[in-house]
Length: 131
Figure 1 (cartoon, rainbow, N blue to C red):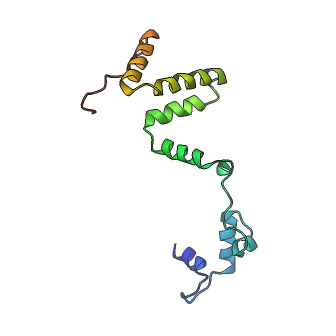
Figure 2: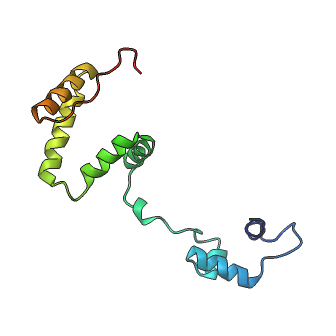
Figure 3: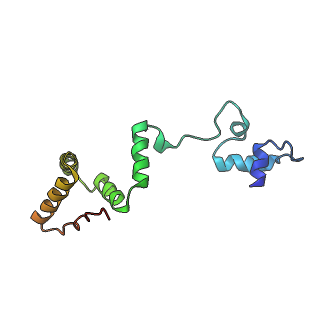
């Protein structure tokens, strides 16, 4: 770590400069040319291609996903997977949007009834104390 910090500081104040061969190694690891690494005109890092088309709203949602419970992450990944057809995805999204318009107790009851109709195991009842 000290070597990188020495490079970042340009070797100033440490009594030694970063060797040319190490500059070349650092540039290679970062996927840059030596000139690009040392240039003040170009950014030192390449933009992540996964972030190129994202808007602020997308990043907010990504952050919420990052902090979500495991079941929410699993459901979201499955919902967005190629295994789910667009038609099914659109119908599920509609059902979810309608459920979210209900208050929590009515939404919970509606989901419980839907699971019963399809003979699936309903979720455990909510604890009135919130635990």
